[in-house]
Image (cartoon, rainbow, N blue to C red; front, side, top):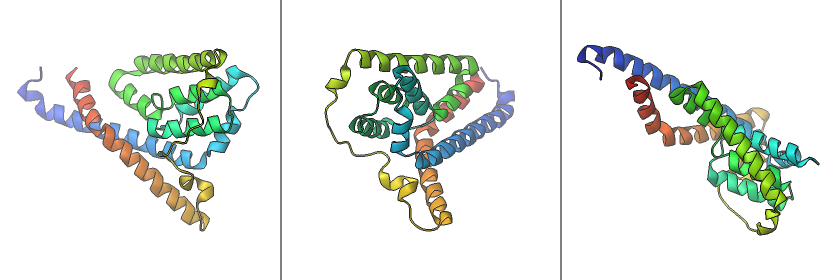
Length: 203
């Protein structure tokens, strides 16, 4: 329990931790959202197209690791990968990793649960995604993927190659889009950041 004498120090430390967490989360989300605008789906397909299925699965998990897509964006990308006949193991690894393992999540986990728990979570999730991708590919689950069309998430109009104008105008447009994405993510985790900052001190 926190005594009444400690309230001033508590609020001071709470404010420091909370705003530090918000700054880290927003900064990382912004940079990765900006990177996503430059990384087209065709480029992802090119990275995944490897003759070795293990390498493809590992690359799929790596791409998912650095792209903070929510599930509403991950699924359309996965469908696009399937339509373009990208390796199934790599696409599944990406599908499993992207919504649950990304820089924003890793930042929050490190702040709330410490480095050890974060490393264990990252390694387990990464290995799990790669293993399931390879397993489903070996079992022939690709035949159960139907030809569907999914709307939502990032669209082709939000990619760098679709922007018009001068380089400065296109860059500003990309920054505005990345800022909006990051702010949207921040609103979703704002309450969790408050709770996590409090629990971090109360512990």
